[in-house]
Image 1 (cartoon, each protein chain N blue to C red):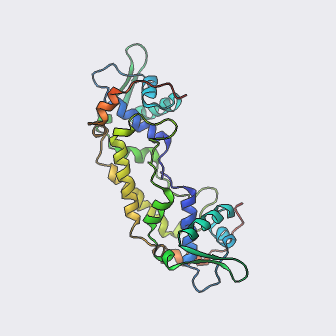
Image 2 (cartoon, rainbow over the protein chains, first blue to last red):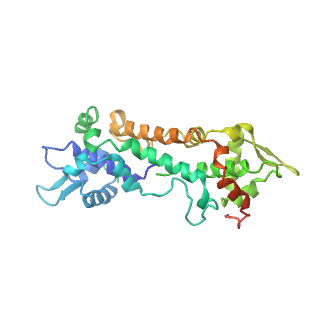
Image 3 (cartoon, chains in turn orange, yellow):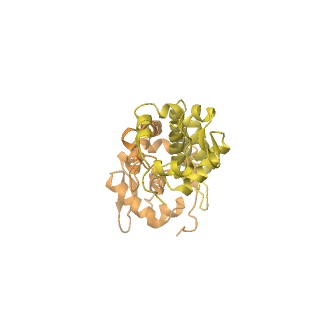
Length: 148
Length: 148
């Protein structure tokens, strides 16, 4: 069972920004290097999170990325739902649709299981994720070699 | 959020066999064609399900695939856990390990969510999946054009 790389990177970016308060706002490049994810992925994710109102991005000197108030209190369940979309966890439709798709008990069972997955993440906020030990660990890691 | 194609095919094969009682046991080719999945995938899945004791496969004339008693009562949660493995739903380890992996609240939250997903499927058996409307629908579909 896998989430997309896009969701993974989005969660890492939000966690990194959640511990940046009071310090100079990091750039997209700095966040990418710290979280060991490719810059190109990170830039796309930052644009999406900005569009969702979860971060502010300012260009130029003194610019950088900052989490918005909505970003701090954002529900991880709601965010993962938004980024993963509402597709089935197995391929019911698509180029070779499953012949059972219109009356499939498995499809219904998997949708309930998917809902249980998201519901488990609903009460957790971005701010919750960076309480100890994660927050201090995040502040302590340096930039690694760029992964792309 | 996606399960592997392997798990998807395994669930379709088990459902197909669960409605085959009393009729001539279908061959791997027949199951593949009915469920619109490639024969090569299906053959690998059949071997794994046989190894797990969920189906019997007999070669030659009068042979074919039959679900075992264990196969009928198998828990969907247990089966999906077995086939998907215990990997994280995002890439914590791997070639570029996440620097937070040793003390990450997100990792713990995603594991709990994954457990909630499986727990939702635990009480459902293969036999449950083919009660109406799915079972009658399965019996009514013919073989489509082979997908490979």
